[in-house]
Length: 154
Image (cartoon, rainbow, N blue to C red; front, side, top):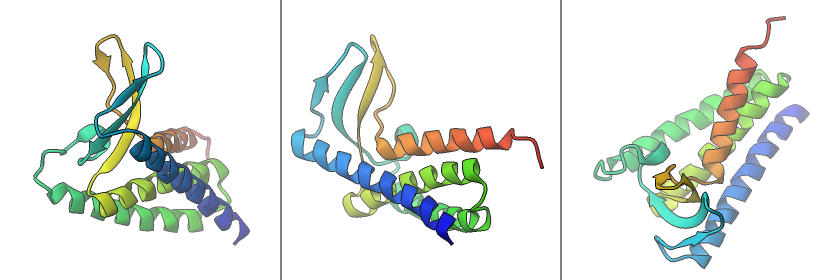
């Protein structure tokens, strides 16, 4: 059971960092405000009512419940997989990051009706959609899961 607590602990750290950084941005920036740090990175305060990169953001409000439901299902499935495979380190680390990110964004979606995004990377006039700590954890977690899938079977 100790390993399971480790994986859920990693998820909890991701959730805490995600919610804390979003709180800092909401307190420091008005909606739409931007602070340029480098020629390729800005801090911003945006709201994302859709999924990754604003997908379905203009769907009229039903997307909040759809993505909340998808997140809840993912949370249960990931929790089950963590329990079942708790000794597989890379696999579980990836799952723990995805779980923490899913919970962080779900919290925003249920309490605010949107997800707070604030990391904005760009090259000249080409902008990557703004994202947050939860999104970063999900992407890194999925990358680790892909990497794990290439391991040779025992």
